[in-house]
Image (tube, rainbow, N blue to C red):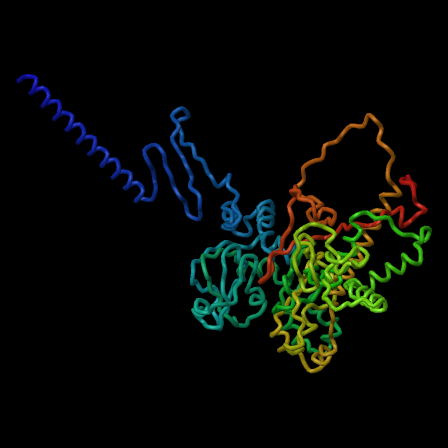
Length: 583
């Protein structure tokens, strides 16, 4: 009985402890939820806070040894590529007169990511960095309202805004293709120089960060004088153009106001297709190239060139004048070249039928004229079709079979645009039926462009400018002509390299030379080179290849050069039989 009472009391005590622990867990969870509800202000000894304009929290805890709070700011260790840095925000909160030269230079370096900011001269960039302030607005916030005066102009650091014709900007959210301005663009600059009202409404499409220049700071720091100097330079540029001589000063100033200056460094892509571009580009300084992405497999010249070089894949010796073939051999070669698809079996059988008729032999039965059924003497000496010289996967094109690896493309330069020339006017007056719709790529060689929308430009020109534009025509070469030029240049480069390698080939290295290991590089020259010797070799590439996506077509490999099978340079130039002549 006593043991039974002891076991019952133990079970009750155990249940009470379990219930107590359960209640303590509930209280702990309530405390945790309360802490999170209050805004993540702390948990026991640790504190997690999120200050305004910060995407990453600050962790802090109390150190008993040092008797102080230690704070760890993740913002000092995270590189933010999108949001405006907090240190720069602190600088923009200061008044322009309180900012030091070091802070202004720091802000100027941060703003270099904005293309519209880079377009200004260096003195003007420093002045803008001195007066800009930071602002962040939410979605549907109207920045500039139509038919109202604005006292600021804006650089977009993050987000997108839409330009609309209505006053409240609601049409931007209903239009499937609104006119958008993104990071790096600016608007409202010319409104500070004139007292005219705004012609459009600008509304935020999402949370957007701006760098704002107010009119008071703009005038107080003489920024208007610098902007007027740049505008005067653009006006003089337009006035010197022969195309725009008939336009009045008022229209030229309107063209300056509508124009947008853009600077592109060397090698930067300006436009993927200038034919579909909605702007006209005036080259104020520098130059740029017009490129064409050419699918070489679609050109008949490339098809002939490939098979002419694949015939040399067995390294046959070149037939020079010193070893002329006999007249009979030359006649056979002429026959083969002239009649590559002919089969002379029927002629032999006809000649044999006449001979047997003269001998009184009947020839009424049907004869199988297949090559396997004929005697060796009666078989065709000329094959009906030449077999492929390489064993590799083939693809049937509209010109014939080509090796799959040989279907490549290349970016080929077709025109260079220099200072003072215009891009986008050569087809502006042509009807749609006469337009050359081939996509043309515009690549910068270090250029400064002044872009104007086509519809705005057409509204300003007069009859004399239209007459000049009617005679302004640039005819770019056909794709086959471009392909022929590419192949000629490629053949010359291959011959030049072979000749230089022959003439300056060094002698054997000394026996005690130190072997230098090749460094691993990201770029490999073989990546942009097509080697026709390796078409039938099943080897894995140890280098990447570059592919470009095509609309409604499979991806196309891009090359800059083709290494074909060829004769040895000693056979082409017998006077250079020994290597290392110039060495």
